[in-house]
Image (tube, rainbow, N blue to C red; front, side, top):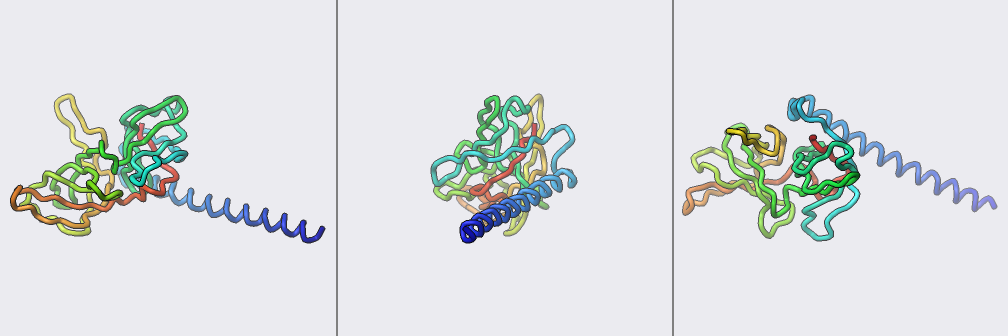
Length: 206
């Protein structure tokens, strides 16, 4: 009887410890999201809706995730999605209570972006054959771009058109910047800031 009671107490203590660690991790993620807004990375015309990741695409590419927020929460197709480290992707389909997020590593993804502080602009796409890696294409080769420089959304606006993403959302940092002289362009390899394979909490910018 004593052994069974002690085993029950140990099991309860383990469950409490796991719950406490999960709460600490969740609180840290929420704090990082708040810091993005305070630093002006998210403009006031967006209302963040926080959701939990409930499904993941069943392939090595992890190109989509499902979240527990939908149209009843104000979520719409093409809304940007972030976590505490920066841009994650966009809403590609939305039901009443759940939605699917296409990550920036998805083959359909294309994000207009800029390198800081140089201001060189291009389009961020997934790197073919390398899950989790990105490239920034169509850059002016005369720009001085080096390893470690930050890449953020450019958030362009034109005549009746605009980017899906607000400006200055962090995307990643330059990992490698070789120059292709034949094409007279620079293709920059990027490592995303967000850990796209281990997303737990995200925010949809509605």
